[in-house]
Image (cartoon, rainbow, N blue to C red; front, side, top):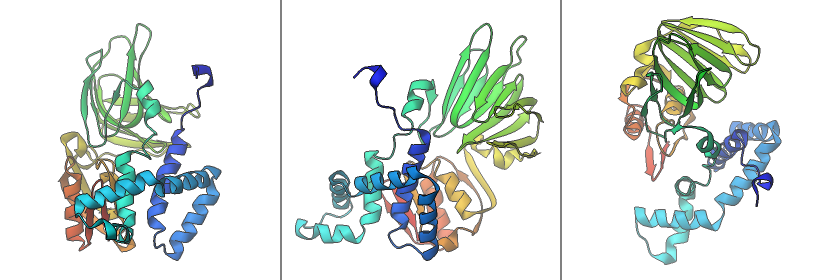
Length: 322
């Protein structure tokens, strides 16, 4: 097959729909009325959702996942083969989910990034870079970044994830950094950018950052101690930056102050190379305050389970709070 006739790869939207479909497969094991209503609304929201769910079901019920789930069960506790199937079905959801994740059957969304980005980090990894002009970049977990320097332009792109920049003063050209809906123009400044799910957040520790929204060409200048979110509709209002909390990841920490457990778990999922599932809706709004190491997300989940009196089930690449 030539390049001119190569089948197109999955789009980020399709990949995201497949990840959501896996979530629904887990939740629909014993859904509440509200979850059933939300699932029906999700299906109706986009035709790709129904297609993704049908494909996810086919993968979920396929022989590859079944065999891998059997192997995982044997690793956890070897049992006689005659009764393996009945016992496997008793806790099929967590084992099947772990098998799907270990097989990588839902992890195909990063393929285009491997063709575009100069630097990628896997989940839980951080990487330190030095750009051609001497500027420094700390690339956070699950991120993709590239840069190009020539006589006319100094440009970089954060395709996804999060990065902390220490930009040197430039006598001629500023560095322009694209991150989803915004382009930052910077020189002699220290700041962070985070681009996830179509929204970019910029946090300035030192100096000034000039921002331009790509959709409507509006401009904002952000100064030291300020933070702003930029979505598809443009700029939010700037807010004050709390470096001790907002930039704690630069020092290898995760700091939460009275944040709902649902938000805390969402952040931990960025660092845990597997699946974190909360099956207890009452836990979602529990306020969490704590200072944790970001390189030990599983220990954080265990701590959260302890302080909330939740029951924790651990499987390969999967933890479930009940």
